[in-house]
Length: 414
Image (cartoon, rainbow, N blue to C red; front, side):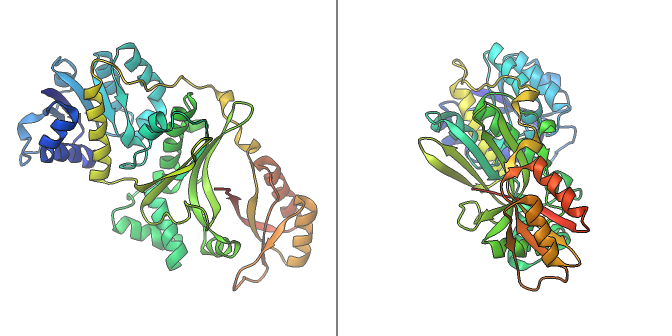
């Protein structure tokens, strides 16, 4: 029998406990050991829980108990989660977490401690909830040289964009519906401003390419400026708008990584990923494009990934499972303004023909784009491929001629 502890009895933590109790016998067969919950750490009381006698408010009960071999961290946030996880690893305990903020900020440091102490630090649930992605990248696709990972990594923003695309809801209306249905928090900024997605793409980049990538160093753009007009232009172009987290290995050994809305073709496998679902594309030299699809959040989908990691930890208590990346450096990440792309530009001018002619002179070979019911003075085009910095400089030149640019959205080749 293996003694385990759960730190944090919120949505995911209670889901982990539920799965451990409900599937006790089948999990015992898979882990070849019975998992027994000895402690649950939470500052709240749960007198009606069937596990009410396992609760503690004292972290030291877990940390100092040598019988506890596997600790689950589902508290969220950096503090006190980082300190608690660090101390557990230093005691030689294996730790499983669903905390993307923790892994994105402190992953390299915690993996190093786990390596030094011959313990495991696993985090399948930190990206994609119940979608298997960490294990496939580290094991199943290990024979590949992965050149790019790109995906829809946030269910809330994907739900909002889906409503805008298919039901012509304005952003504010779709956000309000997401909040009503429980898909978005009262303060939705972590989702709609792209912060949730950037943590996830940083974890995938760190794992795939072997160096820690810090979210603070990454260009991050959300969906708050996306309008129904932009959605209509994307449809006229032959695609949809999705919030994409992307990382690509460049020939010079640096990575091009960002989170931003993108036009993607309707033929893309990611274009059909709708509502609260996530989709992650991994581009390998041997496999080609492999897409992982499913619910990226939720109590039981996320808890199932946590429990799978717990089983992995138990199977590797004596022989540590190798999962590691080194600390990263600032020069490893391509400066955002050097990223190469083409962009959709939507603008207004008194004379659209003259303005489009000016755009061609400034940007080069632009592709004009139309839609039904164009507003007075509105015009749009697709730029040729350039660096982001060059496109922004061209936009400044165009605006100096009396043109008002209201939208600029990357074009994706996915």
